[in-house]
Image (tube, rainbow, N blue to C red; front, side, top):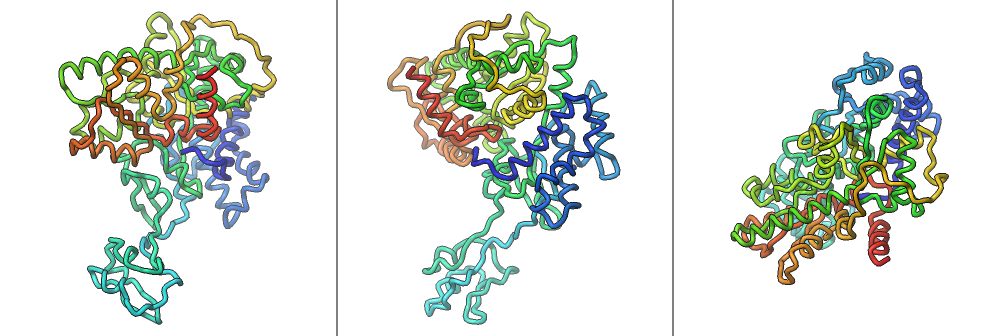
Length: 484
C-alpha cells in the first residue's frame, strides 16, 4: 500500500510536524492559527484555486492532527479554541471513526463510470450498440453515445469494442476500497459507510487530492509524555526495520524515544513469539478435533473483513490476541504504566480502542512518531550507535520468525514451523481483494488449507499506510537480517 512520497503525503507530514513543534515549544494555542499561512508560504497554495480554499482545507487537516472530528467543530470555532480544549481536557482521547473525508478537499470526481473516448471510429459492426442490454448506446455525430439514464454500467460495451474506445472510469478511492465502503455523498463528493469500512486506510493512500485522511494521536501522546506521574512505554511493531534509516536500529530508536520522554521501548515481536506458541497450540487442537481451518488474528483489518462481510466464518478466527495486545497485557500485569503502540497501521488505532481498552493507551504510525521527533528537535542520526542498556521491561530477544510477522507469509511460516508438520497446508492472502477471494473460497469450501493467513495490506504490515520506506526495501532488510 505504501507508495512513493506524494505531495499529499508531504502536506500531511508538514501539518503533523508543525503541530508537534508547537506542542514541544508550549506554543500550540498561541501559534496554531498561523500554521495554514506558514504552510501556504511554502508553496502549497499552487494546488488549489486560491489561498482561501487551501487555508480552509488546511484547517481541517490541522483538526485531524489534533485528533478531533472536524464535523464537530464548525468554522466559527477557532483552531485556538480547539487546541485549548484538547490540551486541557484530561479525558479527551481520539475515538473511531479514525478515517475521515475532508469535503472541502474532495475534487468531486466524475461519477460517469462508462465513457466513450475519441478513439471511437463509428465502425460498421457497432458491437457496442448490439451488446448493450438496455439500448443505452446510439450513434450520434459518427460516434457512440451513452444515454446515462439507461446505462446500468454493466461493462459489456467495454468488452465488445474492438478499438478499446470505451473505458471505465472509477474514483481512485472507490477503486482502492474492495468492500464498497466509499459511497456517493452530497454534491458529487463521497462519504464513508463505516458499517462496511475495515479501517485499512487504502483510500487515504489512493485519493490524489488528500481528501481522505486520519485522526492523529500525537497530542494525546505528548500529554502522556509530559505527565510526570506516568511511565509511558513504547511498543515497537516488527515492521520497524529500516523505517527511520538503514543505520537506525532498535537500540538507537529506543534512545531517541527516551529523549522524547518514553520510559522504555519494547519490541512487539516478543509478543509475536507468544502468539506463535499459543496460536500453534490452538491450531493443533483444531486439527485434532477436526474443526476445520483457522485464520490468524493479528491483522485487525482482516478480522474486520471477516466480522463485517463474512460473519458465517467468524468461528475460524483464532481466539489468540494480537502481538500488540499480548505484550501490553504482559507489561501491565506488574506495572502501572501507559503503553503506546508504534507501527505502520491505521486499523491498529481501532483495535486499540475497541479491543485494547485498558491495555493500549494510544497508537502512533511511524509517520506520526517522526513528527514528534522532529518537533522535539531529536535527530536519530546523531545518536551514537551503542548497545542500549535493557530497560526494566526487557525480557529476551525475539525470534526471526516473530520479526517476520510483518511481511506477507510470515505468520503462516511461523505457525508451520511451530506445528512441525511438513504436510500442514498454509494459504496466505495479502491485500483486501486477495483476502476476499480467499474467504470466498473458504465459504464455497474450495480452499483446501489448515491455516489461512490474511493481511489487509499488500506485502503485509511493511506495506501499511503509515510506513516511511517502500515495502521492497523492508523485505530485503528482513531477509538480510534473517541470514545474518
